[in-house]
Length: 633
Image 1 (cartoon, rainbow, N blue to C red):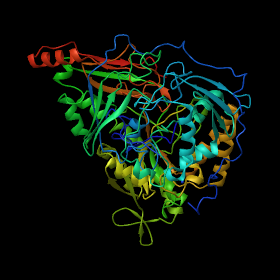
Image 2: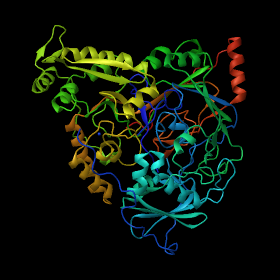
Image 3: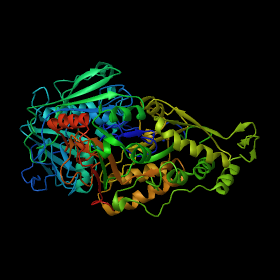
Image 4: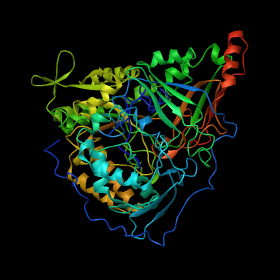
């Protein structure tokens, strides 16, 4: 089950939409009026109706026939060296600050019950070896793989899932998203035997979306204790994992290391064999992308995300590339796009005015940024959600740069007089807004937006902060405009966490714009409850229209590919990726929070030494530059 969507602060890395410019994911994450009236109840909205005994008529499903997407040539071993911009604020998966960039590690070293195949998009076994749907249309049954173990050797059982329900409903974790999900959406998790659980949801959905939305996470009962000091007690404790890696060493402010489990319980499973190959993953704090690139070019990092045009076109070249020591990969994908751009805080007195928000939207010359800074490599994102097939509302087009329309909206808001510096005023108030962002590489594009906005009489004050600090400020709702991206994921768009009023006006929720619209709430409720894809698509289109009309979100860019550079000893299967691959050298399980596509590369330790020796002697290899567009749409 996916948790609160992972946010990528800054529109990660310099206006590209990558979730992993550092190879591990920079930042990850969780709407003006009175306090919300729709707080989820403390108890389930209705009593459990799961049967007392496991139904005898269940049709159990599994998947052991889809194609394998790994390589038999993969080799286990080596140390994978990655980087992150800032040190995590916690090692917890839940609670305050747990939805930052390091969630790409803490969550993805845990296995879901069921994942989705990155080519066929069909469900496939993970922690569960089979699953079934109840006759009531809103219950799912899971059989836990008998081999499943926590990294400390303790068996994974149904008791862990029952404990997880109690934990997720607890107010002590200070986590509104999970409190709601496990109270308002999941009514009950019931143990039938040591390896079998039933999960009852409040309403049905299409079967695959049931698996996506209602399969529970799992927390180790033998490790956790629920108490009023839960977040403090577990802030830096390393919990056991169910995946191939465990966190093995933490040096605060410096690095985090993960160690591979040699006796991992799923080593020989069909879809996990020849995956997660490095023995150690070392993630070093490097607080600047350009500094990190220098580390890579010196051979001190193994791979580097190169979606950003200045890296790909200007810096991913030279003798080490020409001599075949560093390889270049450009791989097109079909994944969900990140909701990326400007998020406007509706609780801010200035931005509470819709005309101001629309005027700002018409003042953003994003096309110029694409043409100049991004060299035409990216496309304009048109809507909040994109890449969900029928759910996409392709009739909506993002507002273009238009000074006349900006002037009209600003004038309607009372900003009709230009000061000596060209900025519009309303009485003694200047039309000035602060934009917080979390990566210096975004500065060049934001400066273009600032200069163009001045033509419309708008001043943008750019506030660059540390990635974690920037995201924390946005989640605390102490900002005017946030420049960031959320990692897109899922089979269908999600709206509740971003746009429902229950998540407005409070910290540590994903409704960062503080939208508080009763009509939007009603649409979300209907969408959440609907079992018909046709109806859900219609509701999604209505909600996208409301998001567009609100002006609370200004879409920026989308990128339908990944570009990466890697030293020659980093090896990939054939083909080098899948339609759902987010990053070719992402070492952990999930892509888009749902599809199993990571960890298929390996380090050829012998070739690493040979490459270094050849480089020292000046003996070149044939250069490698691959552009693979087999999945290009």
